[in-house]
Image (cartoon, rainbow, N blue to C red; front, side, top):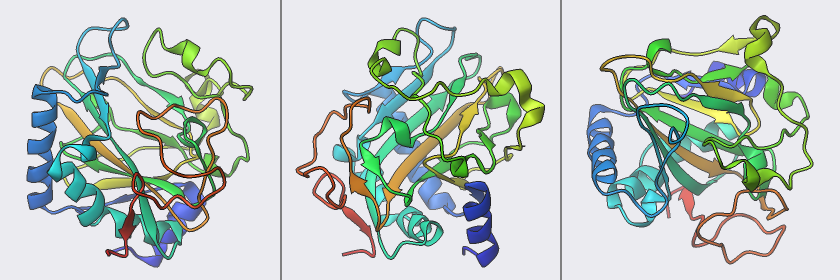
Length: 267
């Protein structure tokens, strides 16, 4: 399913869009799981738009710990093999899942950021598989990427997604991320119109963000499954996000453990 051209694009640009990587059965199962989580949010759910704009930008994480369908997506869907292939890794360990739902009329954007500075992990083989569960374009919040920015050699200070959460990352000594929107013509910006079942696979160091959902009736449901590869190591350095669960790992250890299980090869 993944061509050598896809691998080359991922290595060069830091992101690739794979069409229909998840069949209608997976899309239906995951849509049902999302609706369950929206109706009865988990303990880590939040509305990123609260205090910023009207509407609802729902987020949740670690759903796989209590919902069997999210667990199946993480460990039994095509995502883990896709991640290993594009990372160039012999195996992939599941890191965590994160849900992003932008309801219609939600102006709050996803700020420009890199993923890895938030996370207690180091290494080059760290990636996300972002699965579209709705038709997505610019009007309802397509994710944008600065192509090639994963190779800039710079780690930027984590950007809070929700107003009032700035204090979480004040201990970081990293540089602030550039104001991409102030000079968009300077950057090679990429985005894709997506159909349900398409996925984006992107490096943890690529700079990316997304506009709000300005449509009156088009939802934007996206599930992000994070994976690490052979060279990834646990790195609970100061300034990273404190996960609600702590792995039984010493600093510098490979990521495979009960909290971060081996996802591919299966078993």
